[in-house]
Length: 240
Ligand SMILES: [Mg+2]
Image 1 (cartoon, rainbow, N blue to C red):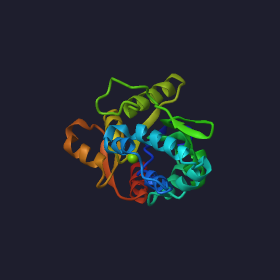
Image 2 (image 1 turned 90 degrees about the vertical axis):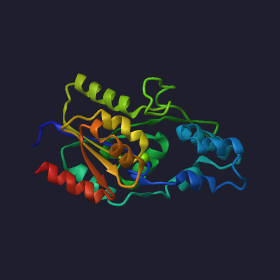
Image 3 (image 1 turned 180 degrees about the horizontal axis):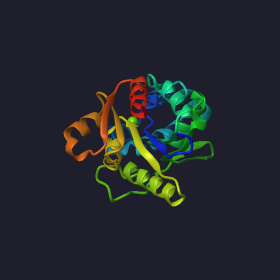
């Protein structure tokens, strides 16, 4: 096995690695209610990044520092069995990347807190900059117009394709792709997978429904999971 092609493991972040409601925890820091225009953004499914950006801006206006935001985000716990799954990734022939519509800063904080930051080769997510103490989230893709399955700020299918093509150009190919996710926006990259690849969709979340509604469109082998331990067992079976 040593020296052979690796499997590429692609993970979503929110509700796949981290069992998160950190946006709700951040709202609880406020002494005043959210402004109506911000609440309205929360209700529009395609405006998650705009909502998070508005929330970060409002937190700053209300005097909540980035240190307090960090402490709050770090209260988020990992999804059941995910740390065991990462222990397996550390031992095996895997390259691990993250494709997420969350922001890079929160992901970095949590990966470091969980002790798995070094295991992740690349994080594709919305960048964050800090200006005078205010955190500002920007879009990974600037108003993309090629994919109706994805939000304007991120097409995960394109990000995955770009990663594989860049690696191929540098001489790296993969034995298979293993995609692990939960959300509606994980469906576009699912369609990029081939017959030798695997998609793990979290049970009772949107990706499961989307795949079941369109199963004839999905070439990859599909598993449904509740815990990272089920994914671990499936990967061990695949390797045998
Ligand atoms: Mg998710």
